[in-house]
Image: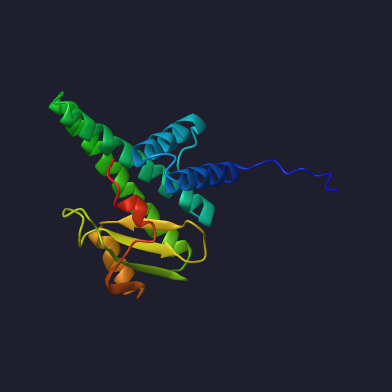
Length: 184
């Protein structure tokens, strides 16, 4: 019998919630837009801001997820504003915020990869249905961790990956193709 019950950490809750949403999306229970909205709301509800230092895998993945969800959510709102023909100034504001969060996500990816010393990391361009993303979006797989897949279009991060000799030539199907090629 275990008399000592360990309290869940913020990371336990975060990864459980993240994995639950990934599985729901993989099973078709929620679409990409719902996945993004549920993640965004979770981040706001927990109100845990990104960590200043990345000195663990968990902090790095939390920061990546935080910035990625914020970026995608703001881009989704901007697109919705544009499609409805509403205020162009709001559209521009949301796009600028999305770009800010994408940049922070790339910096987080770099800091996490540096923390992991690029061990058991593989990166490559992925096959995209989107003409705008084809040849620009690449995937970074952290092979020691389940569901640890990062994405970027950053040229400077791509150069780092090549310098560290973890970037493979050619294109591959994304390990989460069902997600990256779904529109929202």
